[in-house]
Length: 112
Image (cartoon, rainbow, N blue to C red; front, side, top):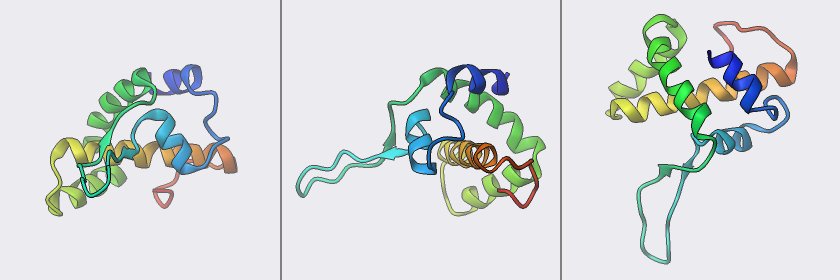
């Protein structure tokens, strides 16, 4: 399901850099600072349908894929909330997929 959604909804995949693709999907933290007022960073904007499908795929991936499971557990050990850790894994996934398409490489455990 994720592959079909990415192909259909994200034709820019493989053509942008990692910051641009994360912002386009909506998994990049955005700040809302103004003067001396600092606020927490939040994800917002981006393409909602892609983000929703990626979230559901990542719930399965952190249980089955050893790379993302290890990254998720590492973030949780640092004290991150579960949803924050899942969003970070989503960002990592979209960046890895973008790089794979850009460099025309296959998935390997050393990719992430």
